[in-house]
Image 1 (cartoon, helix red, strand yellow):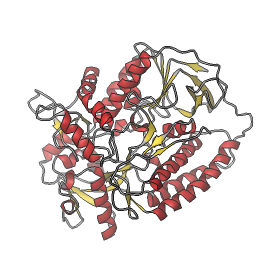
Image 2: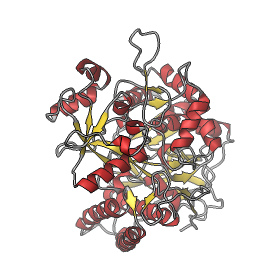
Image 3: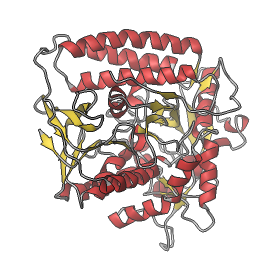
Image 4: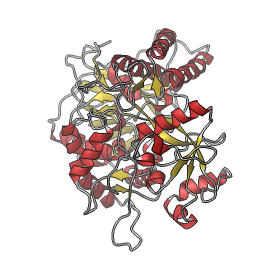
Length: 525
């Protein structure tokens, strides 16, 4: 049994920044199922949105967020996050993040992305997330109060209600050490889910392989509510190439003048929205999807060839280099792009201190539903949310009285055996991701959603039987979480009988007069 003051599950920006904020006063365990550096945060190219320029205002940033959110953002949560934007950026600067400077070196370069009315995205060239992650990882590995458990995957939370421990709180989690195949008990009075999103539930995604909805699934099984799971943001521009897996083409390219074109060179975005390429992501993704389906295209093209080659290499060095490796010179050739599942706007319901309904359990970052993103996330608000709510969670944890922990039951595998048919897992994984892409994608219908729900029920029965009879493995844990997450997405989508933001329904094309969140509540299983 491992005992700590705080257990953090997930090593992206939410988890790392929370660990660093707590480590001065608490003993912290950070559990991650891959290497410490493996996360969606490290793939964030564009940057972090904050009102930093004198010509910009907090009110303008709030307004842009509310517009992108299609009437469903919580005004209170939006103001809470945006007002703390500069403070969050200042904290990163103090940690040593080398944000890109203006040409004269006097200040920081700010770029603009879709849905923003001002240049307010601070960045490190076109690899902001990687630079932030590298900076924090170095500090985190060196801190004596932080113990990092790499190659460890959480199986389930340990709640008082589920295990009859005398209270309703969360006391830690069961965790599989993937190197030894042993299940360990992590005991802590405070547990934070920082596990990221659900992108791997879809066949095509910009997310890393780790994005399997683990935190959302564990919280649901522990009795927490989830909300707005139907709102899956499809990034409009993922590189389309047989040898490029999940390579994102940043929104900032369109912010700097990139033009979307059909194979014949025709521009099409002005026909879909007056903001053209700078429309919010849901509009651009649907426009691309519409053009591809209408014309039978495999992809469309993002054209940067009208910009100087030196400018492209300075501002987008990683994209330039990766495309060049694949035979695409972005200064001379348009970039083939397609939409791909990118970000989950819904998640575990959490308040402005990142607290869930389960005492002692916090949810931070993409795992959480805070009300900030509404029906569609404004570009570059995601890393900002991680920073603001990790600070809020840290403040709440440090202000909480220390509470004694009950004796926790050890993991029981006395009634299971080694798996004999692991091919079942890979087959179910492939089936799930393909029908989710086909039936619960950018545009949905009631019939498609019902078909998806039917297949999910069949998979759930198979996986539950498998889980009950065989020892857990990384693939089984992820598949179990993915199927549950898919079910939550479909159930939320079936409840929303309108089109709003990222949820587009052919059966309900209009938006309702009053915007409401889709909240699912679970009785403890």
